[in-house]
Length: 301
Image 1: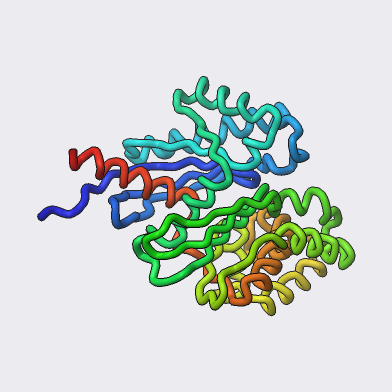
Image 2: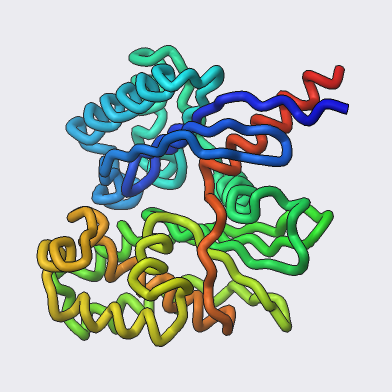
């Protein structure tokens, strides 16, 4: 019997920190990355609930257009455009969606926090069918953090928390480098934000996804744990973002977000009580795996 059909698909995700592209060859049971690309559009610099400034709207539409052009050049036969917390929260988020569709001819779909968590859960695990046991998946984004409790053969239990690296940096980590007092205040805010999250008893696996988690993993040598978070945060308090970028080989925008990302990951590491692994993928991978499942259902009819 022939295996599942493979199609080349793409997803563009408009988030608080980046507007990012994934192009992949996908089937119902596999995803092979062809290309990734991102622009630091930094929509999360805008205050919560405020309108996105005109220059941010223009830059984001331009970024989406450039990424869609790249996807088409690579032969993507379907392209999904997804907008997350920062767009759904902005008072003019719908205007951004309208501008994108007028400019590019594709809809920019705003998803809620629970759908965002579901996609991240699927992307992090490579598909829920692959789960071997109870797993927590953490999508630490720029404007919000989504947490899923995933069990084999069950729909994930999801929650969305209005705290992310862009928001924490914008509101609390005001200096470069941040002061000890600012770090402690940010930690208290993060602890309070996640106080309603109770991890399953006896949890053995916790997975983190997102740009901040990927960066933290590289700096800590494999997994994210409390000691690693403290060590890298101490470095962040001694060096400016520009110095961190140069010494650690990071993009400047990612270096600027590193302290706030670490505060969030540190709070969650302490809460789950185990180290965090970094997932196979994240939101965009989850979107494309869902797209492959839709294709498979159509093909079988």
